[in-house]
Image (cartoon, rainbow, N blue to C red):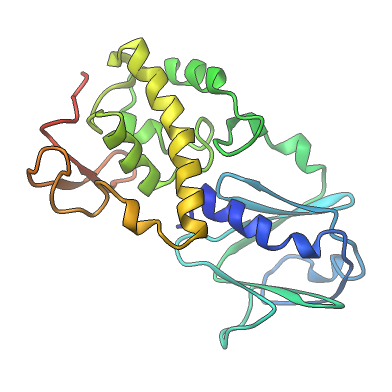
Amino acid sequence: MPEGPSILILKEQLQAFAGKKVIRVEGNSKIDLQKMKGKKVLEFKSWGKHFLICFKGFYLRIHLLMFGTYRINERKEAPARLSLQFEKGEINFYTCSIQLFENDVNDDYDWDVDVLSEEWDPLKAEKALKKTKTANVCDALLNQEIFSGVGNIIKNEVLFRTKIHPKSIIGALPPKKLKELIKEASNYSFDFYEWKKIFELKKHWLIYKKKECPRCKVAVIKDHLGKGKRLTCFCDNCQVLYS
């Protein structure tokens, strides 16, 4: 599943179509496809894992789910969920969720919970975390209402950077460690974004899907933890369990 940095890159890749009129719409999505025909794209926005295409009076929310893909100015052999064609170029989305909303995107989204947004508010994240004292950190980091854009890779790497065991309880973290966790959720997301743009993301993984801890030289533990049973890679030696 693409994480926030990948959606931000998608937004940047499509800026050439901002302000352009859609001249043809195709796809097997069940939304009213023709509503976009003849309409101008006002802007593209990203909120965590949501990619947003904004028109006057309505917007599309696209979620690439686990296996969603897109093509810019080219097509796959598979049928597109949505194809937006312009005078010069086209955008095609595949195997994704698409919803249409008849209102202003700014009324529906809190940009200050997006870890990659200029409006990101770490103090708001801290207040929200303090209300979930009994949650495991591995679940808290994936809570999109607190850390919009953080996915499983970011979760694993942030916990390793901060030396926090994934089974730690939010309420047991020392105040300084809690602030460090919040800061690194955003910091690592921007590192992810930079590495992803130059196709070097995997090269920089420290713990995710690794066999040995780079700090302790002991075997990395791999388990499916948390409410979602997501793959979690951690070092039982240097990542402290706060409980």
